[in-house]
Figure 1 (cartoon, rainbow, N blue to C red):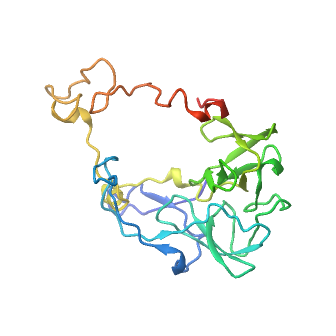
Figure 2: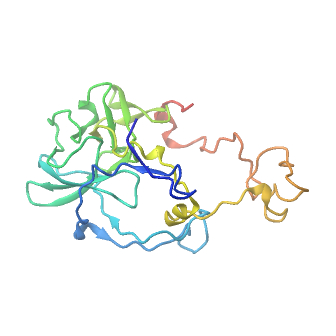
Figure 3: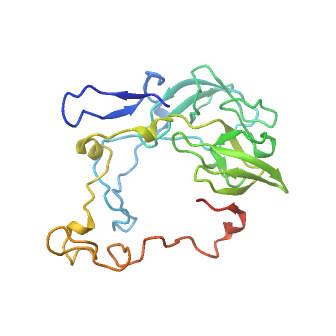
Length: 276
């Protein structure tokens, strides 16, 4: 089990609260040249309408420009620091390459300061190394996998995530997702060896409402506690039941057990086994 930090019960909110173990992080300031300030949208689209509810507020943060492509082919790098990233659940690593350039990459679990990093077709199969899927042995766990060659990592980027290589055939690699789904990815796509860092992220207990607000999460009200004109489940005397035949959202769209994936989506042919 991944290590998590527990707190003394100095208050009701503090009791039971946990956080990931940050002891492996390097105590350095973030690299200024790779920082940008993003405008806060609070769940709103470009037209200003709320498209994602229950978002807003939160601590100020600078976005780290993470290199998901890692396309410096054949140029060895060395990890200078492992750092916290406020915009993602995983930790990031600052790498200085042999030509002097510095980049942030997703830090795999076990990557330490001084570790080597290399993207190449003849790289060893060690944590943090990156190569094409067709070279990676069956059974190996990978992360930051490209869907199309050169497009940059899209699969396996959140904390503790990894995908397992099951087979290589006919120009495709079969990958097992964390959900249990098995799908085909072009085997010329790049993937990094290992599991994403901060494996204890899913064990975090927020503990109190204030911490949730500082994370940019606003309160969520139960639909059954609303009035009838606010939601399909609203109204009634006391603690009323749902009152409708099947689960719906506030706009009346059926939600319970309904498949939302498009039947004619182009990538259906790449999915070998559906998730459970």
